[in-house]
Length: 399
Ligand SMILES: Cc1ncc(COP(=O)(O)O)c(C=O)c1O
Image 1 (cartoon, protein in one colour):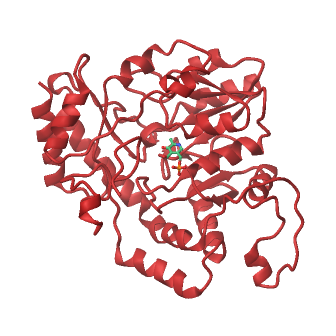
Image 2: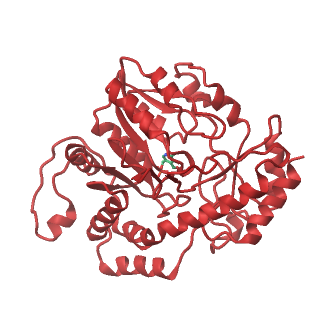
Image 3: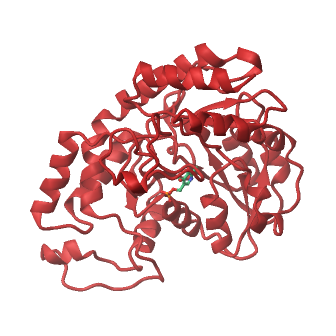
């Protein structure tokens, strides 16, 4: 199941996958922990006889709203669906522009495009803070701008005070792409809970892995109502409610989708949510080891120096190679030692589809940093030997 492209998942170290189909990484990029509790939670959901959206989804929504301290949480099929629904909920559509960082997974830009709106790409702050630059966001806002989709890169909170201030002054909505950031916080406020809506992903390489899954959180009753309707065909009741006799019919209030989460996945989320904080802390400890060993070594830098008042989710361990390093050669050397690596991200504005459609804004910091990015393995149960193997291989490969 290891996927090298983009930021997708590796389960090489502990899984029992068909070896012929899976490169046997000594240290995969990410890994899941199929604990007894998790297996039992899924087995109990299977035994319950109710597999689609039902009581476990409702319970997971309540628990996740508790994590974010938001009034509402709506569970959906994946993080891309969460972004799509959030943009639909604010009535983003043809002719609108949405400002979004280029250094990002492509899901946000694709979701904007699906609505007939245009993604306007903007730059990062600098080579320590790879989140979106509020000054460039402000420069990118124009009369057609409907929203800003900010992204808490690697689980590090964006400069939300500045971004929220700009959005309020310019009358645009803020949607937080918090796919990397469950459990992250800025000055006591949860990532995902600061803008109009926050969108999460539970893809298997994420901090709360469930195979596929997503969540939209909000304090706004009307946005929640629209997301909930859009999630399930615009229908006013779910099968589960009809099964329980709480309803025996439904109306359709708008053209929606089937973007529902099922109860088996919700069971996985519920089983892992209590351990999220410790898992994020464990990730942070590993990142600190990488930082100690690699920051400053032969010109390597590790972005996101610890900041007071910030609790990162430590989704990614990203280093910047010295300028001019041949990254492909470093990655090949790591792979030869059995160490999987990735790049988060090739800038979205450089992909063929977006090159032909972008506004052509200069993004010098994104361009410069993107050549040097390298993502190292990171998962909560990564042991010291694995960290050392990665550090040794990087030290060998960067000369
Ligand atoms: C920043 C970001 N946004 C959105 C997504 C989309 O989430 P999903 O893969 O669950 O659709 C991802 C996940 O890959 C992501 O990393």
